[in-house]
Image (cartoon, rainbow, N blue to C red; front, side, top):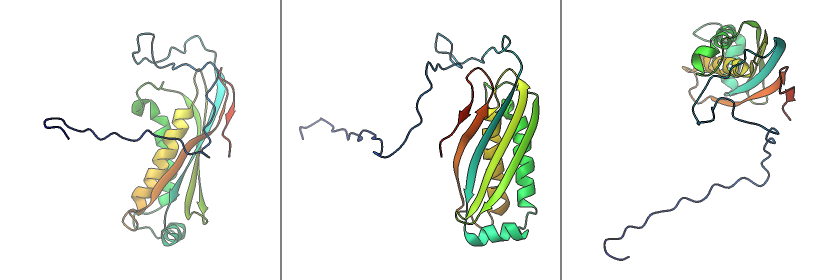
Length: 186
């Protein structure tokens, strides 16, 4: 190496796994939260008509079998783990506009949190269903609800197992609105 010259280590280029499936981009998609100058903006939905909209999201909390059994037996030291997670998810959906900067406050008409044990994981599958009759969708509300419900499960039993994982948070289904319906591929 010549004196005074530094070598810079180059990072390898990121490559996509050959078998990884990526969902197709939406046709004519545009970033609606960015104005023509590139600045963040809240989308003006005032010209949109009120329609019924629904979103379903899911996530998983992966844990040891012993931790799952403890929760199912109702023996967690902090109390009713699944009841607390359901309530936290509902509350989170209602407060999404205060957490995600460009979300509209919405008059949500339904939030349902389903938490099912999955012994094969082991852990829990968490699903949130959110409905509104409004001018914009509730995908973010469903995703926030699932995230907070999963985090609440973690918080309630972390004294027993800190190595739990929260995985697979995603939108499963969306209905209504200008962009139409969406259903995730399994």
